[in-house]
Image (cartoon, rainbow, N blue to C red; front, side):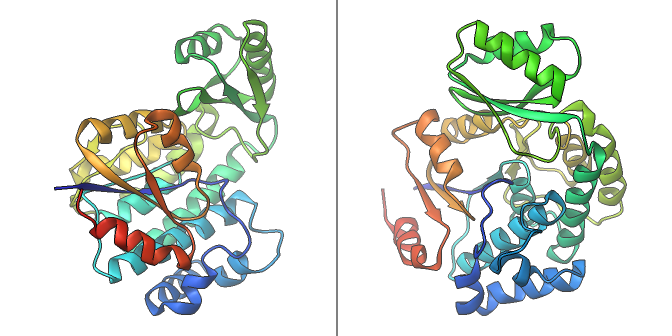
Length: 309
């Protein structure tokens, strides 16, 4: 029997028009955009579907991405399909939490909106993130530890791709040292803050207060935490893990390796872009990830999920 995982991408995959075909063709998807707009006071259809300056601002990007992922997920579930396990990268973890039933959908919109705002406002200037390509994990970690100032691993994406984050001077110094040591490439990222670094601890603590006010349920089935790369099965764990996630390393590669070790054979990436599909090619080239990004993908995904292995 196949074990199925639904995966949700993080911030950075957004684009104008994402989710529009689901909104136009599926009532269950349209309802998600309407609920999100009502809960947040934003016109999410306008932000996602039309040219505007908001879509690439963190405080709007996160709720727009989350709403789109949730709309596509609900469309697939409405067709009768679910997963044995859920996982998401950074922002995508919130879609995984909702998919698991741990967080009420009506609570999720405001939480994600607040997360984006807290993260954007936490460290408005002087931070940076850089993708390190072609380096061994241990080398990147040791350079970060040796570099003066605040710089750390923000994302373990896949073999050969690690992201570092922190104060811009420290990030630049670490990148220069890595280049000296023969690392293939260090690529500064166009982001609005030093995400997943200690500089965002304050944003996590603001978020913690919001999370602790919610009513939670035990995830069923479980989802994987970015912080631990382990299953979350108890509701009591969730507020602390999500609060810490803002300033902790995202262990995406380890999450995927965990799913593979537990016999997951079918992966569906739900949401804009094919970032997670690309990471899988580096983690385990033998495994296929099918993308559900556009409405035209839906029939192929359904056939993939129905097929016996």
